[in-house]
Length: 125
Image (tube, rainbow, N blue to C red; front, side, top):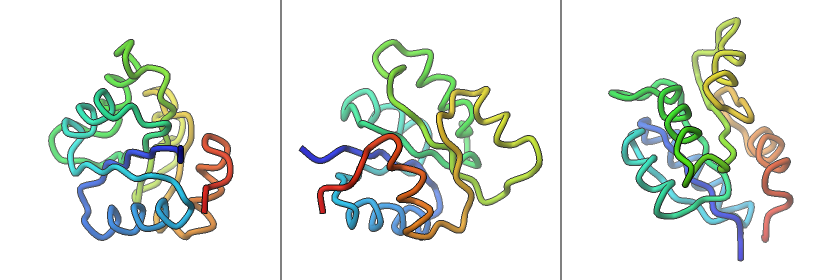
């Protein structure tokens, strides 16, 4: 079975791009447009990896990662934090919140593959 990847991003084009790239790698995408929806999906779909934008309306990606890691049912899911607004110290802040990886936008196929392969290996495609 191909690895399942949950993407949380409220920006439609970013979400669409990441889902398309994940599909091209042979991984199975799941998507959510809010942290709340993403956390529900993480518990029900049991993804092998989660990518979350840090700047989300309502609950931020930082808070989503904290909650994911605090929940025994989802704590083992690796998370890659994704942001378009990378500032000095943001990666450390994301890692403190529970991120296992960090990726800045804009995302290219090569950069996404490089960021996800340590968690998923080579795709099934």
